[in-house]
Image (tube, protein in one colour):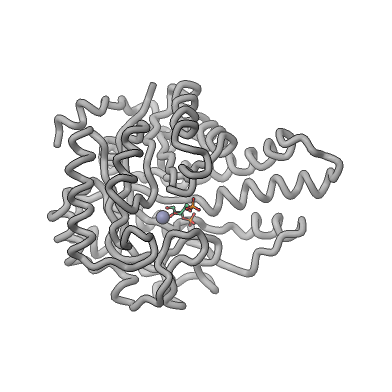
Length: 344
Ligand code: G3H
Ligand code: 13P
Ligand code: ZN
């Protein structure tokens, strides 16, 4: 069994100059695609479950799915991570179900929609950190609100994100405040805001420094060289997947994601965790659409899910290679949570 905490995994990544993709998971096919890619690439991985995923699969089933994946792929260190926790209870129940890492996203209030102030964010994140560290579980916090520098809008697509128009001050993490936040809360990793948002519609053109402010990450890394930084909304929204989906009856409007080269630039400046969900959703959808369109008589879910799984596996493997994660699984010996708890 190779379950690992986020802290141990990202410490290893920092020591060796790579980043670990956090792939969202909500069903078995996604889990198999990610884990098979990780095995092929000899890469450790972060499996991220959102509140939506927990509601979709149910905590019991999700926990057992992860147990099954960890047992089936014993050579892959797996960090089981809660994505965008909104409250202390959400984080505590994730820990009860075997998560080795939780994100307390206090950039928004518990409704997951209203931007919070610094005092709220700091207080809730610090309380979650105290609770999680006592269990040997790692914590990711977030400072700054995800959303578009082009439109000023927060995430509109998946139920978690600001619904009001945001100022540039809210959309860009303040580096001095980041320094204070890490000191005040004791988080193991910090998610920062610099123009990315969740979903397929991040940018209306190839992003430049105006709308994807990688310089913010560089400045935060200069002030906090030992803090593991996290990039959310890091799907690249590949054009070839857009085309496959559209050529089989889909309707993806012209859009741009975060170029892999920009993520690699972030990795050179302390980014150690890169969140990707949309790309995998698109890969799965592209495969399923292709099979169902080309063989309209097909009604065996295994046949069309297999094709989606294969495209998702290719995408995950490409990201492990691009982020330098490949080749590191066999070099890590996961410590049990008790050993991690003793460190805090
Ligand atoms: O946080 C964003 C991820 O893409 C998860 O999305 O809340 O629809 O599961 P979700
Ligand atoms: P994408 O929507 O860009 O894949 O981002 C996922 C994410 O940040 C999950 O927390
Ligand atoms: Zn996110």
